[in-house]
Image 1 (cartoon, helix red, strand yellow):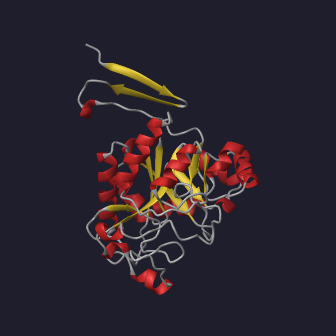
Image 2: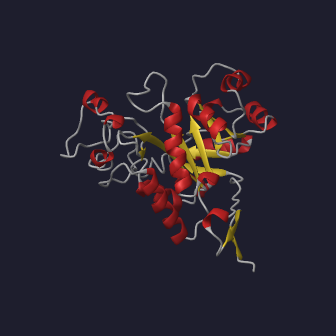
Image 3: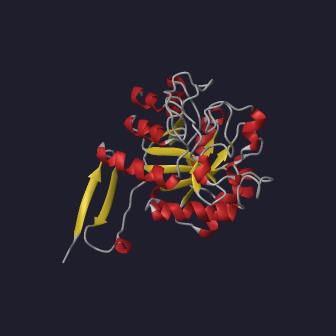
Length: 304
């Protein structure tokens, strides 16, 4: 008896076994032909790396939710760019602001999640993003964010989402701000598998150690190599150090040239730059043939 249904949404297709056990379900959702990504959800419009930011990005029609994760003392995967509470937009459980020194001293890796959740990361106006809507909100667990995002996307009739998740690790901070790269990666992948999104997730990092672990231990999960504008090595030299060719090369948008796009494509890599924040910049990058954009203002995608 054939118990198979077919669901087709926009540019995505997936085959789903309707009544067979979950372990036998086969799903294939191609990476978007153009990956429209809101940086940290929709950083320019909503408090970064929060569930409301992801919902805003979904409303803006992104194909991919971009975010960062850290690890708490009790080994929870928490959605956060910083490994501490940033003084620019975080308030203490008592509603007080913090000095830079005080904020830096509150490393999330030294705190259990039941303490982390008490901090407000959305009410204080962010000095760099005046359009950002303000609200009382906390740093969510990755598991909870995925649950909320998947449900909201389904409710809105949105195509299946991809996830682009950055591991916030840095050599020299192992054991103080995060676990060793392998443990960090294992904890993250466990959540991806539990939530059933490993096959539509890209793990990205500036720290090559975590994506090297992914490539070695979890070859079925796609990787992206993040590169800062200060990078002086050639692409060939960077990949030689990395030791493999990632699915995506993700440079600062100012580094992108027609030659770099061609070089990436010749190597079989997609190129997804970060973070152009004007319509003119995004249009120029699309003209060069990039495979996606990570921007703080995903509302710009609707103006292309």
